[in-house]
Image 1 (tube, one colour):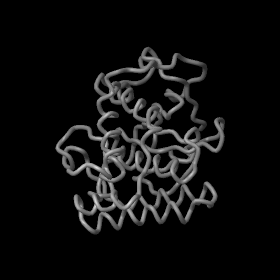
Image 2: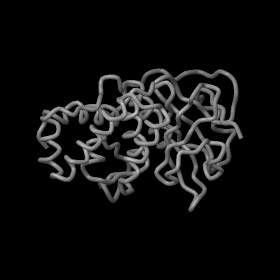
Image 3: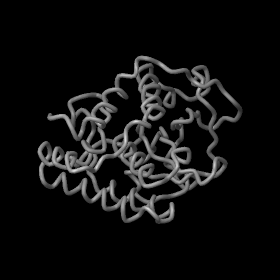
Image 4: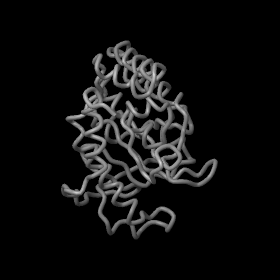
Length: 240
């Protein structure tokens, strides 16, 4: 099974079964999430003493030690192979417990920064993917080789899910980094995942179709990205 993608066009959704179509709410989440990634160049992981002190003050000593451990992982693997980088980053974040946004943040949808994810030691699938994405870029993996992939997970129950995909080359079957199945496997061996679309800073792709499509234009209503971007940039300076 080979996963193929094209830039998303709104009319393409009619070709899919009802359980794979996007609701209006989800479609806007995808658009906003896409612009979160495409505008993420100004947000980088920061490990200066002020950031660590702020994490400790807000979340406690154990949280600051988790951030220090992430910094150590990045430093120790700066010259490692990409396979080792994927392994260590995936393993590091998959130690964190899953908790959905409503229980965790009392919101239907909340994009936690990596600091908030590590600080609270919990998050949902999007938080795992965001943290892995930023960390792999920080550790030297080219962003164009990474895609955030929306899927339908069929086991243990059918549910919307997000994973991170790594493409050795644009035509290769991607490797899947997941918080449910914690082994890094080719997408062809993840029969429990039905790909719907994926995205990164270069575009947005709809699964299982070939050809070229229209790339979406920039929107001004990107509140979720603005909030997350602001929290990341102000993590070392603002008091909470």
